[in-house]
Length: 156
Image 1 (cartoon, helix red, strand yellow):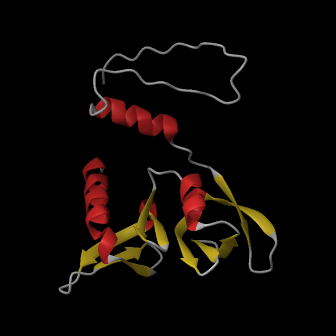
Image 2: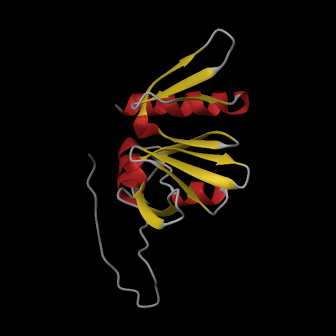
């Protein structure tokens, strides 16, 4: 890894934390790893409702997939099923982009929960999760899904 210089600047007018990464190229592997590490929000909790309507928090690491069915967005985790009162697009913005991938207009998957994927002879793309559940990517999203999964495989 290249030499990394870190410095702290106090800014009383800032609400949160701002991190700026300066390098010769964004395409540099070390830069990409650093950006992922800094932007990783592991342990980020999502506010959801259980089947009885009780509000609770779900760690995004427990999410297997998120799907939209009509006006409700369902959150499927290893611990159970939940829902949120937001649009799928809004939920997608809350999730870590390094872990989640949209596979259709109605579904987002957690890449860390995928155990295998394969293409069928008809050109469909099947995704199987660690818990045995499966889903299918829509044809419109297949090329983007394939590209992202190949990138993820290269990181391993």
